[in-house]
View 1 (spheres, rainbow, N blue to C red):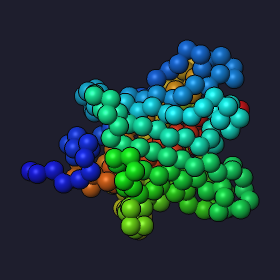
View 2 (view 1 turned 30 degrees about the horizontal axis):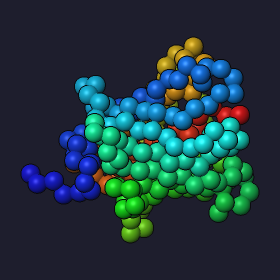
View 3 (view 1 turned 180 degrees about the horizontal axis):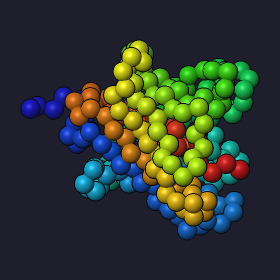
View 4 (view 1 turned 45 degrees about the horizontal axis):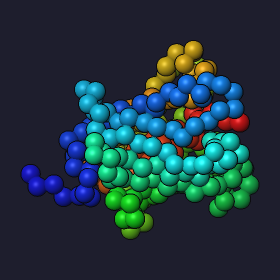
Length: 223
């Protein structure tokens, strides 16, 4: 079958599961030390097909913490950037929804927009864990609905992937529990994303963006 989709994302067409493992940096165990995040993306068999690297400066990471603006580049085995995430800075407050709702832009290749992931407003903002995924034309294609409380007490935290109208669940984004020691010493997280294998490639890429936004919003160490 001929691949039809953004260049560089062909491998995603074969997958119904993506495992994302954040690299644990030794220096991040020290209080107040935060480095650029790095991640490995694997299939269900453990094959590494992409790596992702955050690009922010030292001051931004330490002043803004988990609400910082960032760019994340997804690189293939030849270190070619094939997917790009960009998160603008938004305040973390219950006031002024237009300036507090978190969002992330997804493009492939860089400069060619695929769509956006946007936090849905609610009275619980900024704790709200509901998101809408929009394609490049602004049409809602999927939603992600998380639990009321994202704090884990020894269990995985599951965010449901549902259709745009919310009528059916088609997958999940799961933050994997790693044990009390790992959870307390580091903010290096492991996730799995499950979706239908025949899901449109651009929607799969948007779900990657949703996962990274969720990681920073709810599981990145806060200062």
